[in-house]
Image 1 (cartoon, rainbow, N blue to C red):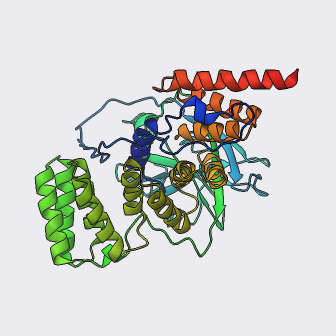
Image 2 (cartoon, helix red, strand yellow):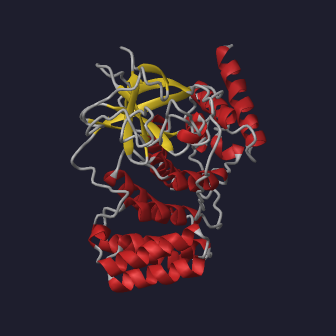
Length: 414
């Protein structure tokens, strides 16, 4: 699953990408010259994000009448076809999955989250069922990640209950994209778009959790845990000290090296950050997270050949969960004037980014299609970009690009 922190980082990076001059994007006088290099801008800002969370336990709260929360969309296989069988739609909260409903014969779904009449009690989700919790009220099951959704008195709205949850599809032999429910309100548009399913392959070995790090001895784990607690309290110095203790006690602690890299990145010490990320990968080459940060640093430095290598490695480890890897791979090929490879990668990015979290994917594909004189295709992607990034800094320039290709479409129709 793609990291939520990374989604924010990619959004910041993509906001400055592809400041493409109109002259390089369009053919003039019937010529077919490739776009010039260096057209994709880069920033040198830091990307680490350290959210701090606090919890409190009130002694008593009034009953809250929860407004129903509906979620709809469609499940598709990543080859563009609908599943041949009904698919379970489930929420995953704090690592615990609960079935919420099913898709229809064409892959569409519309479920009310938390509706007990629709909840699917699967033996794989519940080790047992006990309708009576410690307070003597009826809950939705002992493994409920949502706390006591009781008849005697709810103390949370649905927005609060599902704020740390994801929704995904479940089909044997496939893995699913996940959609975060954080920030979703009951009155929001229920449509969350398309969720893709991908049949797993043995060659895909990338891990978001460092398996090597799980073998760390107790003293190293204790120092690492202290470092993570310090991060929550925004005590960066204490965090760094504890992570350094962790790698001293266990030099193969890839996760601790990764956190040290993020701290250096936050401080603007990009060379040192890169060194720490490389060290993490030296000890655990299948740990994906350091690659994602190296990808971003390499993009910012505009080292296009190296960016191709890094993103190729990410795609080899996990060809499904990281549309940003395909996007950056396309940007690199574009700036190296390998337009065919750039188009191939950006189309993969477009296919995986079903919720348009990276609008620049549409912009880059529009530029490539305009250069290839596929003006209708270019116009469609320019419009998509403006739909999902109407207030972007380059919106006026993109509108000019759209107007230009629309004129060409009109001229060709005469």
